[in-house]
Every structure is written in structure tokens, then in C-alpha cells.
Length: 391
Picture 1 (cartoon, one colour):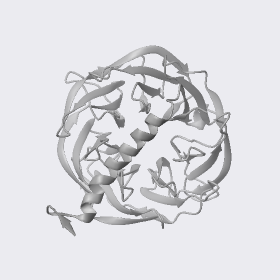
Picture 2 (cartoon, one colour):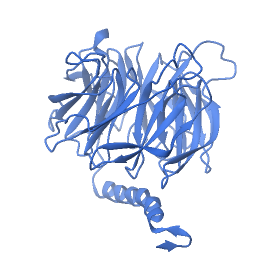
Picture 3 (cartoon, helix red, strand yellow):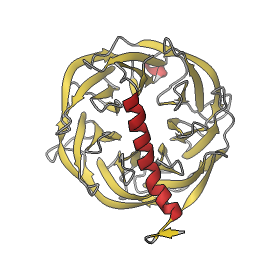
């Protein structure tokens, strides 16, 4: 069936993200806003950390409580929280798990009263050095990117939160122009679109964002057509973020210190490049590499982190999805590996890996400017920041 030239399926793909946003808004309006959020912090344990840390963010003041160890496992550098908020999943960024050249994915139960984590089980990630993961929107699978192995995987989630063996492992092949960093594939992140139908794997080694059709019921990943979107040779795509509207997507390129903006066709899973802009000031002459990219919940701003310049780059997002540079924030920041914006859009928490600190910035809702709150906590080698409402 067609309506005004659009297939019924295409209308559904357009309406699903809008309806989901309306339902979320109505649900959020019906519930009292949380006064505090639990903040889970992923770290590297081979550099002095004990595992996953937890603290509380006071949404009225931006103050963070002192961190405590919530759960222990090896190198839980990146975290993902299940939609039902009962479980948390962590990569084990290692290259040997149970005697095999692979990393691990750990499943934890979240204590609803204390926020403490209880290890449920672990499974192989199907490749070495998993560095990023997500839980699909139905809560049925964990998807992870293996940097060392140059692959991506999908693992099923049981009703008890435990992980099953991988139902899909897709191995990337090829290389690009940088002989030191792009001698082979290096999958650096994995993300899903709003419809839960397509997965996107930014591969630093290939200068491509690989696109897969995703079947949440079976946990399968199948190459899309076209199977990828390319960035400039030597750019080194690292992390990926959708605009809240679902119409645009952004890839931050680690080696070139740029952000590439794309339009997104949700029916076909196709990314089309709009522009590429630098994350660095024009007068910067040193060495720097980007890390994280995050769109503000309002859809007005985009942020990217620079390691070397040690700053957060700020961009305004136009109605056409294009980016306009709007300055940098560098106060107190050292090696900002990852950062996250709380669900209310009021605060940005930056994890300074080399400084062993997490810094809280207040976001100006009109300009996107980041204003230091003075709230800082010390955490060993913080790498990842994730939020959930405190009970």
C-alpha cells in the first residue's frame, strides 16, 4: 500500500521514532523527575582501578558523590545498561579469555536499593579487545565491537539477564592508508538506529562505517546493501551518534580529528555524507586524537572530545543536520576519553582518563556552552560514563 507516494513500511519507519519520542515524553511527564542519577564508570583495571565504580549525581546542584566500587571484572572499559534497568553489561577489554584469543562480555545484576553489581556470567566476545557495546532496544541482545579482532558480535540476553553464546560474529577485512593504525580492521564502536533494524560499526582500520541489518529475535547481523559508508582516507572513524530526530548521524574520526555528518535513510539503512568539520582550533599545532561524540537531547548541539588538545569541541546543529563550530571547553580536562550527557540535558560529565578525574559541566540550553560547576571526583582511569535513575 502506498500513501502520497510512500510505502506503508516507509511511513512506519518514519513514524516509529516520532511515536517512541511521544510515548517517552508522555511517560516522563506522568512520572516525577528523579532528583538523583546513579552514574556508573567504566575503567581500566590494569592501571590501578578495581573495576566498575558508582556515584550519584544530584540534578539540582550537579554535585557528584564520592565513588565506590560497584562491581569487579577485568578492564570494564565500556558499559551498557539494559532498558529494564535491572542489568548492566561491560566489555572485558582483554585479548585472552578462557585460554582463547578473545575478549569477554560480563553481565551484572543491579541491586535496586544500593546500585551494587552482582556478576551473573561472562561470555566470549568472539574477538580480541572488545571496546564498545550496546543493548538492543528490545533488551534481547548485547552487541559489541572488537577493536583488536576487527569484528562485531551479538550475544543473546536471557530472562535472568545472563548472556548466551554469540549468535553472530562478523569479521571485517581490509586496511587503509595509515600503516601504523590501519594495517587491518579495527572495529571501534557499534550502535543501533531507533527502529532497532540496522547496526552501525565504525571501523577505524577501514575508514568505513559498516552497516548491518539486525534481527533482534535471532540476534543476527547481515550485511546491508550498500554494506558501508566511507569517510576520508586516513580519517579513522571511531564513535558514532544519531541525532535525536533519527534523520542525521555523526561519526568522529580519531586520526583526522574531524566529525563527518550524514543524512540517514531509515528504510534502507543508508548513510549519505553531508560535510566534514575539524574538532580542533585553527591555530592548534600539536598532536591530538578524538574519542567520543554525543548529540544533545535537544538536537541543537553536538560535542566531541579531543585527546592532546585536551578539550571538548562544541558544535551547533542546523535544521539541515550540518554542524557549525561553537568553541571549545578545556578547563580541568586531561585526556577526555569519554563523556556523557545526563538524560535531562542539564549536565555533561567528562571522564579524564589521564587525570583520574570525572568533571561536571553545566550545559547552557541556549548556546550549548559548557560551564564548569566546580564538581570533580577522583576515579582511577575513568573511561566510560553511563546514567540511570537512582532508586
